[in-house]
Structure formats: C-alpha cells, structure tokens
Image (cartoon, rainbow, N blue to C red; front, side, top):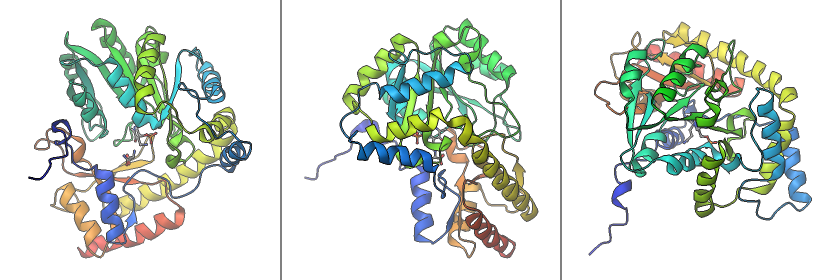
Length: 388
Ligand code: PMP
Ligand code: GLN
C-alpha cells in the first residue's frame, strides 16, 4: 500500500503561479517578465557590508529578534515618518516578508476568524489564513482603476472580522492606496475593533506619488502590524531579509512562533541590509530613476503593441489589458506567449482571485525590473504578437 504523504490541509494548494511560469519560461527559453525579481544586481555597498560581515566572523546564529544593528536601523528609519518603534520589543526580523506574514497571521488568527483581503490578492495570504482556521473575505479592487467601493468594504466587515490585510503599493495592480482610502479603512478598523496587517514590500518603489503606511494614521499604530522586506527595496530578492514592526504583545506572539519555525535569520545578510537601511537616502534616488526609465520604456512600447496599460504608481509590475489583442482569456494568452514564437513569460492575473468564474480574465502582469537589454529583447519578441 502506498503512503499518502501530503496532509489534508495542504492538498488544496497547487505550486505557485510564479514557480509554474518560471519553469515554463525556462523550458521554452523565454524572456521572463513573470516572477517579480530584478535581473540586475543590488547596491555594491550593501553586498560589501555583508561580505565584510562574513570575513569578520559574524557567522553564528543571530538573536531570535534579529541583529541589534538592523533593528536599530529600522527604528531610526521609521522615526523619520513619526512612527516610534522600540528596537528591542517591537521590531523583529524574519526570512522575508512571506515568513513575517505567516508569523503575523498565525499569531493573531483563531479558528473561525475572518480576515479581509483585497482582490486580486497576493498568493500567500489566503492559504496562510486558511491553514490557521481563518476565513478570507475578499473585497474587489475594480478595474480599470483598481479602486475599492467603500460600501463593499463596509459590508465585508462583521463582528467576526479579526484583521484586514493592506498591500500597498499593491501587487499585482501596481496601485498605491491614497490617504483617503486608508482613512476609510482606518475608520472601519476602529469601528469593528480589528487589526491591520500591512504588506509594504514595495514601499520605496513609488512613482510620482507617495507611499503612506496606515500605521501612521491616528489610532492605527497600536492596532497595526507593519510587514516589509529588503528584497525589492535593494533588488536583493535572494537574501530574504524581511521584518515586522508591531505593538509589544503582537511582537511577542510572532516571536513565539518564530522560535519554532526558524528561530534566527542569516546574520551576515542582516548586517548587510542594516547598512543599506542606514544609507537608504543616498541609495534610493538612483534606483528609482532607473526603474522610472524602465517603466516608461515598457509602458510606451506595450501600448504601441496594442496592450491597454495601467501606468504603475508603484511596484515594478505593469498590468496590461489584453482585450484589444486577443479573444483568449489571460491564462490561455500567457500560455500562448510562452509556447508560440513570441517566447515571453508573464503572469495571468485571474489566478489572484478566489472565484475564478467571475474574475476579470483580460489582464496579464509584466515585471519591468529587468536590464534594458532584457526589456528590449522581450519587446522585440513581443512584436511577433501581430502574427499570432
Ligand atoms: N508580498 C508581496 C506583495 C510580494 O510581491 C512579495 C514578493 N517579494 C512578497 C510579499 C514576498 O517578499 P519576500 O521575498 O521578502 O518574502
Ligand atoms: N513576489 C514575487 C512576485 O509577485 C514572487 C515571489 C514568489 O515567487 N513567491 O512575482
């Protein structure tokens, strides 16, 4: 008799869209605009700091909470936006924002609790909520502008609502939530006594607009868990240094879990990122300028090809409406782009919806954090769309 290895709780979950598209891109030798990772390197100064940490012997376990250097650097950084977090009792380092989100949701969700998520929803939230016995409650961001309707958000709240996840800048829509929207969410959090968990991994990647953390709104810092990561800020996705800033009791709960799932995060990489955070003001302008150029290049060319493009306010993704180009749905179109002569990989957006029947099926996502040569090659290959 063969063993059935996989526990029931994991069976509903397929391999992620990013892994699937990544594999297909490789097999079909595609230009890969799929998974969100830069194909250029992060700042030399940050890499040098990590290398120096290794050479100088910082190679043993870090404290559970994270190295004092990175927690202190984060505390200073948040002071600049008038948020006061104590480095010892309110800031914790995790293996990426993904693990921080796992820790935050596991720390606060009891079976039967509802957690509101905006849809399209980044792929990790719903499985983590469900694995903790919680119930995701989706609220749609409506295309083409990907704003929510306040009335729909209000009706998603109930006495069972434990938390709301706010991902801004938002992946995959690339929208940045406005002060007005965040104030509306704040009012509902206060009215229903619920927690905000933010996913701010693209906090620095904003164009012609300002990123606001809901924690900075009056009454919210005491009910918000801020999650972010150095992955996108420094174009170092492989380092997996993420963090959470939260009230003391929430921090204690997250650390209690963390001691059993990892208990420590790479010491020298934390030290490298600490240096990056200390110097972020000098590093960032050039990085943003570079991304802005790529964003413009790619948006303009995609429009010329017949895509209807939502100009990103943040992140390094472009959402492109395919309806003028094809009658196919997003998944079939993405497959066609990969397997035909075009050989370009992108991400279909309908997979980020719970109810795939009613999900919009006319959007695909391009990652533009790529070398200019990669972008140019991909755009050239996309010319072949005309022959499909
Ligand atoms: N949240 C969002 C919205 C993301 O796009 C990503 C991908 N970087 C993550 C979380 C994961 O971040 P990390 O690599 O730090 O786990
Ligand atoms: N955050 C990345 C994206 O949206 C993917 C990370 C992953 O592969 N899970 O593309």
